[in-house]
Image (cartoon, rainbow over all chains, first blue to last red; front, side, top):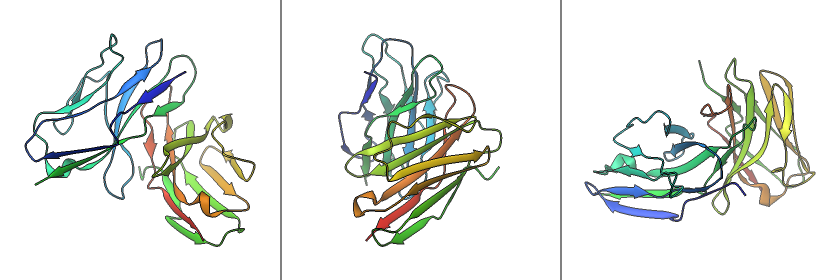
Length: 110
Length: 113
């Protein structure tokens, strides 16, 4: 079954500390992977996608096919990074369906 | 572009009433998605359309829920009759082709009393 697992529902760090939000996927093919972010009472918005291999707001994520992971990392967390983060993927074929993980609520404390 | 537009932003109604949520996707996007977000279950895909045709409605919880997309610029999600457990934030999203990021609306916060 196609599945995205975000093992941590809550993650709390202090400002300036490194942060890693974990994401593992279950899919035998080559998925398209995304991280979406939702700030308090705002719409979900795309943070980054693995094929772009870019850094957005200091965040990076590397696809590790061996470990089927797509962890989101930032070396120095900021208070404005506090938000809900969702890992998601689109499976291969003609299926447009985006499968989301259950999300991790990141809180960055001052 | 104004992005995906949803209405209303907030809806409070009594159980048993019919609720209609509306969505206008981004012009040129040919796929539209309806999601429900709750604290307990996170973000759940309810149904999605491609070129106005429902492709996968396996996430629709029960017959009380129905969705339509009469044209490329408009979709509705209807709940009839509504129940308190339907209280959630409902998001609409759209995208262009396979694998492209979805663009989300602001959501409708629905409260059924």
